[in-house]
Image: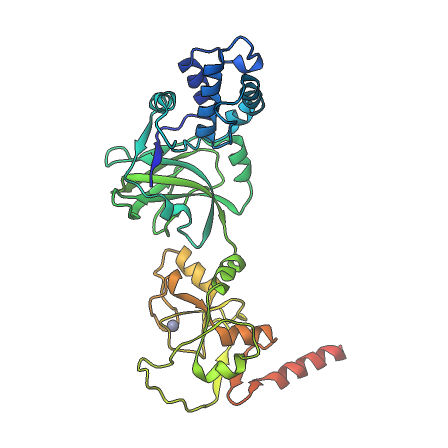
Length: 366
Ligand SMILES: [Zn+2]
């Protein structure tokens, strides 16, 4: 769990300029590498590959191979965000460069847990890890043109995690990004507000601020994640679901496990209890005991995005994302084309189906 910490961040071009000067070679040497000795050339390509996470030729390769590698990647690296990979062994010139670029070695922080921490975003690129403290609560970073272009896409965003020295996510009380103030946000905090500025001001006890370029997941994509888990249902409905391809998990309908398995007709509502719209993505908390009504994932996400607590809005039970599952019976009925209210007992009966048919008929008359 070693990682490099970057603060402040230099752009690729500035880093390569520092490296050239450390190796005592001209800044534009790569256009004509004949007058350069093989040793600095090898060091240059080795360090370049570590800073920018690109595969370099073997260190013992010929001078020609190294100079071709540098010539073909130099311009690209000027535009890339530095990654500062951790080398397997100490490389003095790399350490010196890191020092010059104010990159500090950090061995306490476990970033892997944040690589894919959120269910609402997919991390796309690491922008930087910044050290912060009570008096220095501002973060500034450079975004390459490639990243700015990516951010023009409405599904792209910047997100920030605030982390304390125990590797725990830290709640920031108030965050100002590009002059826009926000509070009551979910973590990670979504930064990008369609502006080109790139500084972040916040109030927090956090020790670090971790910034990613990320993709905002659509409701469908989030639902697809939930479909990877077993779908929940109750014993009474199980027999109707044997034809489905679902991986089912049975949940008791009562708090006590010794429930009566008496089969009775149950009316299932396929409407959102909040908006009365037809359910699209029926979900439930693993703690919920109601099977005739379920949550709509859209409503759940709206609640989370508004900074409200992750609870079931039908029964109030806690329902963070790890407790959220697809409701098997509602999902099955929706897939079979049912809507409104459906009675499930020995069979499945659409309530109000006749009325719907009549409406369709009257439409045909017109
Ligand atoms: Zn509930």
